[in-house]
Amino acid sequence: MAKKTINPFEMAQDQFDQAADILELDEGMRDLLRYPLREYNFSIPVRNDDGEVRIFRGFRVQHNDARGACKGGIRFHPLVSIDQSRALAMWMTWKCAVVDIPLGGAMGGVVCDPHTISVRGLEQICRGWVRQLAADIGPLSDIPEPDIMTTPQYMLWMLDEYEAIRGGKFPGFITGKPVGMGGSLGRIEATGFGLVYMLREALRQIDRKPSEMTAAVQGFGSVARHAIRLFNQIGGTVTCVSCWNQNDHTAYSFKKTDGLDLDTLLSITDDFGEIDKTKAVDIGCEILPDEAWLEQEVDILIPAALEHQITEENVSCIHNRVRIIAEGANGPITPSADKIIAGKDILVIPDFIANAGGVICSYFETVQSNNNHYWQKDEVLGKLDVKMTSAFLDVNDMAHNHNLSLRDAAHLIGISRVAQACRDRGWA
Ligand code: NAD
Image 1 (cartoon, rainbow, N blue to C red):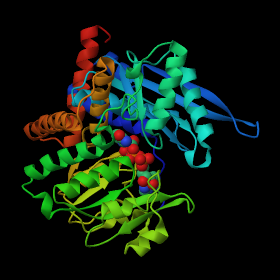
Image 2 (image 1 turned 90 degrees about the vertical axis):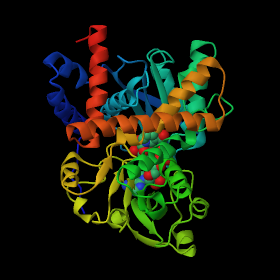
Image 3 (image 1 turned 180 degrees about the vertical axis):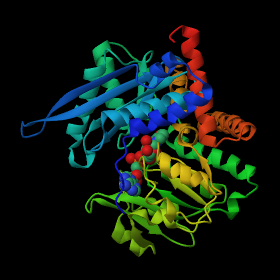
Image 4 (image 1 turned 180 degrees about the horizontal axis):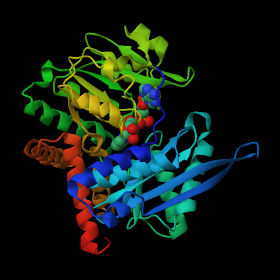
């Protein structure tokens, strides 16, 4: 089904406007928070093995740093755009505030398809991205981290370039580094596990046991697979996942009614989260079209791929058995689809709390890197569980007390904390 094109930044601004009305923010504060504080838009030249130069477009947007240094991902994807980075930076500002970590919001990326670029080319893009920004990012101002199609190795190349430019060791410059090279144990699991910590709390609220729950997941990357791992560990069953197929330029859904075995599926998946279709048939999966994951008769949907995947056009495909949607991706439900879902008996755990595990653990990584002292994995995941649970309970209380959705409640908490920090600093 054709999807309407949505500008993610306009979507983020609309969401902000609604919260600003409820919070009765004055014009100056709205003007400050509706736009990024700073943005960088640049070109990265890369010479390939034949001596040809290819230019890649790069971005960094710093939305707000009133509560602390900016923090946000670096995405390598053909559809990266400045408006997408603006939206993701704004959402990151609210996300850090609602889970109460002392950081602001940023986002950036490079327009490219890593599948089609050599390892040497990718290293040059990473180093080029840092060279363009080295004066404007750093451990005390803007701390990048991985996002779609960027890996711990890329973060290490970026750190190495930053340290070469600045002269010295700055392990707190970037997070998502490999473990043993300044990375935090638990970072790889953090976003997916964090989502399931919140899902567990949400199930408690509606008096349901994880062992009775089935789920369908969009995406089979870092977030999706760790969410599936912990969901399985607490007793849940995942019957359908979907992922992108590079050769066919479309996505497919992979279904097994009695439950997909995560490790078997991982053994036929590449580094970019793409499942081999032929091997999937061999292990007994049904291969279904792109959006089939959304139509499954399950209790929980976990969109963990890209933004605006659940839209006005396809929202009616959601099965009436679904009780919870936990947003692993950023902005996977459009505002118009969100309004339709609000009329159903479905609890939406919104992105900027559901997927905040990554940034919370990144914050833990910064703390560990800056102190040059690293924690055990159980310690990291234990602290993560405490933060995620307490953020969920704060948001849930606000939602109940003021008859709001979790999304509106989370927005109000996040935006009011950022607005207060701006007021305290005398910015607006
Ligand atoms: P990833 O690159 O590891 O995996 C992305 C997955 O999505 C892959 O399996 C890919 O095949 C699949 N995919 C891509 N396009 C698709 C489509 N049209 N339909 C179905 N599947 C598709 O990325 P990730 O790190 O797992 O991130 C997923 C989402 O979660 C993104 O929106 C990202 O911004 C968000 N997020 C990630 C983190 C993190 O820590 N990694 C933290 C917060 C939010």
